[in-house]
Length: 131
Image (cartoon, rainbow, N blue to C red; front, side):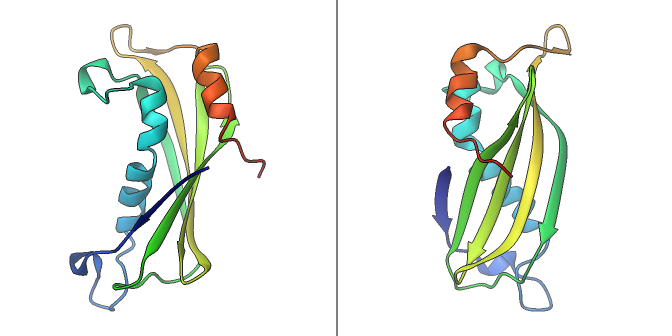
């Protein structure tokens, strides 16, 4: 598991006073950066090897400004050319948001998916969680 803590910004709130529902998917993307590095260690967009095929986000409770949030990132499925990243946002000891992103190892020159190498597969496996 990868874990990152952050403080929400005031601008992340909405008119109802809690964190806007558009923020968790953005924070989840940031939490996937360590996994991006398995495929592109220097994060150079010219060498990028991933595309996102699908995201799902479930809201279990409200998130609030002024309280630290923890982003937890796991790998929940590893296929031939794709894998799923499962993530959670925790605040005040409760899981408030969860989500899954289906990622595809992608060759931009050929515009097609490509098999995940054994080296990267090993790295992904180190962060695997059974759901």
